[in-house]
Image (cartoon, rainbow, N blue to C red):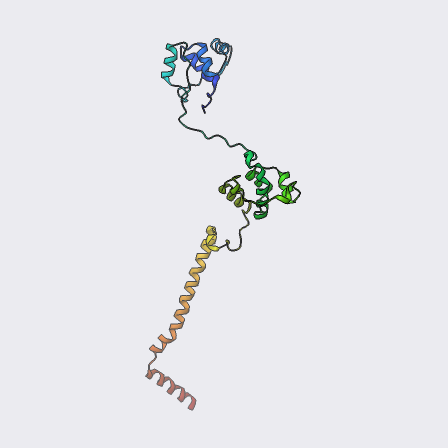
Length: 242
C-alpha cells in the first residue's frame, strides 16, 4: 500500500518556489485543486506555511522532477518508502470469521471452565464476543446452553496459543504460589545484602573462636610438665601442715 504524501500544502509551497512544474502537475502530486496551487503561487493560500522538501523526505527524486519539467503531461509518482511503518493495530474485539462465529460459545465455555481467573474483557479480546454472551454462557442462560460443548479456542482457530498464554499470565499476575516465593529468585536491596553478608561473617568468626577454645585445653596440657605439678603439690602440703 502506497503511503500518502506528507504535508501536501507545505510540499506544494516548496514545489512552487523551487521548480518549474505546472500548477496541474503540482496539484496532481499533492492531491490539491489546481486553483489552490495557483492561490499558493499568488500568496493568497497557505500564507505562513514553510515549504517542505519532498526530496529530503524521501518521497520524490530529483530525476522525477526533471522528467516532469521536460514533459508537462507527465504526472510525478511517489517514491517507495525506505522504512516500512507497521500499521496500527485496531483496538476492539477480535474479528472472527463467519464460519467460526458459531463456535464462540463453545470456546467461552472452555475458557470459563479452565481459566476462571480471566476477566470478561480478556475473553472478549481472545474470542471476539460480547459481555452479554459471556454472562449467558457462564450462567447457563444461553439460548443453546444444553448443546454447548467446551472446546479449546486455539483448536477452533479463534485465537493463537501465544495470545491465550499472554492473557492467562496477565490474569494470574501477582498471585504467585508459595513454591515460587523462593529466596533465590528474590531481589534484595543493598542494605539487606550487606546485613546478610555481615551476619555470615560474624557467624564464621564466632565459629573460629569456638574452635580455638576447644583447642586451648589440649595445647595447655602440652605446656604442663611433671616437675611443675609436683612442686605445686608439695607447696600445698607444707601449707596444710602449718
